[in-house]
Length: 182
Picture 1 (cartoon, helix red, strand yellow):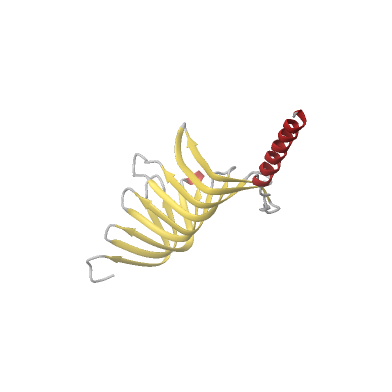
Picture 2 (picture 1 turned 90 degrees about the horizontal axis):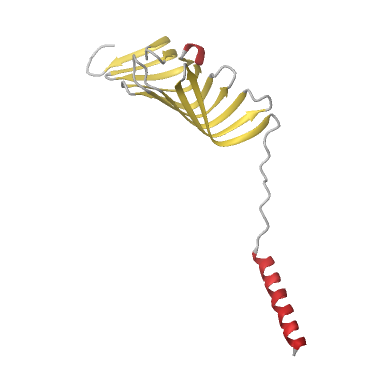
């Protein structure tokens, strides 16, 4: 009888062990390799520029890949929000990709860049740079700019974040809704 009970216990333990090991799937290996110039990648990364204890802007990227020296972060699916200034409203910028310099706090935005202000300005371009030392956006690409009744296209633009004033460089074509002449 003791032999039967012992055999039954051994059989049950063996069955549980075998069944348990078949059901547990081995962990999936991480197959994605980072490019050689990238040291680490972060999902849902958040960056800030702070001046005199106040956040000037906040940038959120779905993915950030840092280069080996840690100065540059290559970003994708970007949303950048500028705080309201005493002279103007807040600004929201979206872009498909970009690069952030941690040393200079400059941001290069690329791919379907869209900028909207709470004061009614919006513009679109394929590439624009934010220069932190000047609190200014700059591009030499074509820009489609809109403000109230004004629609303007130009090649090249500077946009001051604090005053929200734009300066256009060349090939300017402006139209005012409701007017018959240019």
